[in-house]
Length: 176
Image (tube, rainbow, N blue to C red; front, top):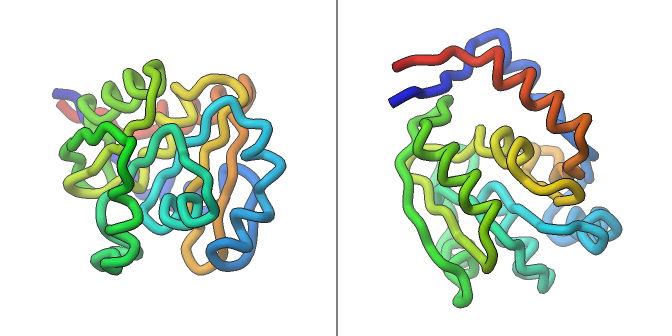
């Protein structure tokens, strides 16, 4: 199975927001990105705390990708409980830290082409999921993820953004 591995030189690039950074905490970030979320064709949340605050604001993302961790520590119980809301089909996948497995990428792609609400629970790490999510999300979708110690980022999926992400993913190391 092919695995994409994050090379050291891309780590600093990926620490920069891929979209609009909404500074602050929790619900204030969700309120700041309300215009993008209201206009979105689909909403995809990457990260436990990100999904939690969207759900708390009454926004039900089409796809939620979580790993039951935040900043490498276990997610608080109230966040876990909120992220287990009914109405979501749950799929589990393994994905080691600093990688994107072929299985994980394929699951993201097929999930984004489907209908209904889906929760992907990652055994490992979901941090890099934002890249294939942007690649395979429909145009006009909003991808939301956390920017540690700063706030949340909302990425509107455009042809230009897809091209930027494709170029980043092409710089990752391919391992068999």
